[in-house]
Image 1 (tube, one colour):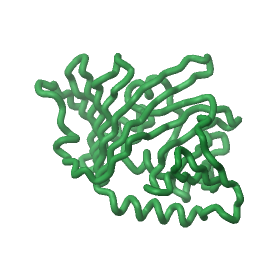
Image 2 (cartoon, helix red, strand yellow; image 1 turned 135 degrees about the vertical axis):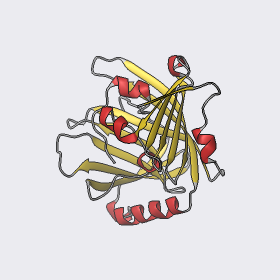
Image 3 (cartoon, helix red, strand yellow; image 1 turned 180 degrees about the vertical axis):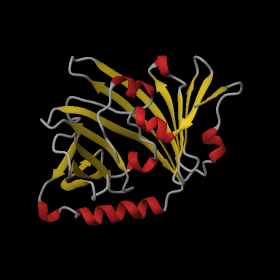
Length: 237
């Protein structure tokens, strides 16, 4: 689960990242008693079990990014995905990117970037896209935890947010001490990540991903996820 540094071009082109100055102060009750916290092994097992029962998933990702100069970028993206390996991201906001579509098909190793302004779709390999920027090219990278082989995972707390229990897990690279730090909120009803906060090595807030309105197993079809507006001009690279 790669999370290298993202720039604003990457965000505006389709990386749905939310950056905020602090953890939202929603009403919640937190438990930090280590004896009452679930183990990371149990959490990973529950996540694996949850994903095994999901064929498709949809949700809305609200995006806000704050830069060192104080400027803010906000976006909203609709996500539809098949667990078999197709991920579709449709921009809803900002208006300048509304209607832009990114489609990642792992089975065919193809990435399509559609612009409603030009009515063109750039069709290239996922490998080509990943060399240019960091993207969430599969649904498990968005809704799950990174691999414990690559990241040190620590259970921090259990928080009840809006009457739903979430276990909070931190993740830090095992090989790069200067890399970003991650904090995941895992919904203990669905065992899917509903929020991710990212800070830099100095613990300064960098980003947060919030996922809302998650819907599971709606019988989504690959043809529907791959569909683009009539008249789209494809540019193969």
